[in-house]
Amino acid sequence: MSQPNASAQQVRPWLIALQKTIVDALQHIEDQAGSGVQFVREPWQKSADEPLQGDGITCIIEGGQVFERAGCGFSHVRGAALPPSATQKRPELAGAPFEALGVSLVFHPRNPYVPTVHMNVRMLSAQPAQGQAVSWFGGGMDLTPYYAYEEDAQHFHRVCQASLAPFGADKYPRFKAWCDDYFCLKHRAEQRGIGGIFYDDLSELGFDGGFALMQSVGEHFLQAYLPIVERRMHQPWGERERAFQLYRRGRYVEFNLVFDRGTHFGLQSGGRTESILLSMPPLASWAYQQRFEPGSPEAELTQKFLVRRDWLGQG
Image (cartoon, rainbow, N blue to C red):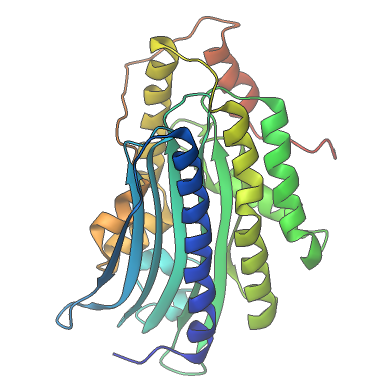
């Protein structure tokens, strides 16, 4: 197996530092809530006889007062052949040796009024049979509320826009539309949440520009999400709200297992299953043809928020 390339070695320490910053911020919230629950930090390394080589750090908290389950993982792996999920837009790289590293997180709050959030930043490189090695970046962040608020959605999208502003005015509308297209449950014709930003196969900015964009997205994450958590985490809730939260979490599971390219990449390439599936909620439910009373907050979520919208009022 090839040794890590120089570009990956430049990105790696920044990713590890980002993971620590985010985990420390969530731990602080749990400490303030008095839950007494700590993040588990588990370094791991693939054994020499496995098809995928590399290492990572999985950080996860379960049973917290604020976060029922929150996972934030760093991974850095090398493999002999890119899996199909990574070559949909790059068929010329099918079967090429590759290297991938990134930070991925999903936070499932306990309070149904606090939305679930996902963020991922990553770099991939591959060596085709002929020609030079190629590298590209991907990532983004998106918000999945259960009980939605206009001000929360607008705040999240404003920060997403700010994270991309230094890289051109075209990036936010382009990556916002990309997010809407990607995080869609096609079998239900339904958006997973209120979106955010998403990009993949990004090489147009070169290594330096792509890395800078990755850094900006990652460093804006806490600014996008924590004010919403702090605003909603103390709202009272009951059995009705909990049942709806679990029902909507079922949609989250459907997307991650059926459509998510990151999940498919990890499983197809022989990655660490426990770390790949840290995005799963601790509890979820399904119901046959569930209907909600017109005008109810539950019905409003589907009608007003789980649709493609211009959250910034820019037309």
